[in-house]
Length: 99
Image (cartoon, rainbow, N blue to C red; front, side, top):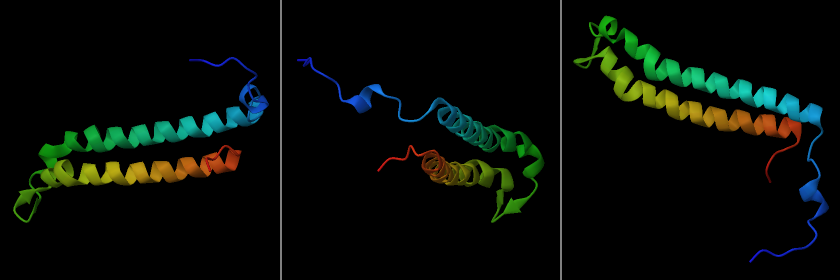
């Protein structure tokens, strides 16, 4: 059941001014594109060179195996933590951080 009533003033007012919101979005979208580029390079770019990396062996396995099996996953996980930390910094910089 939906109650009708007056909404709090904070629900209808903008939290930040438009200039700050635009600056926030520019930084956030730049971070998003950076992480997307890292994902693409780690997920696809490195593996395009698997044939050239296969002659190099580590513990009897080709180097491309390590990039595919472990290296890319490590890059993804580290990238996620870096993204979260950097996004929190951007949030704090623009005054929209969560408590």
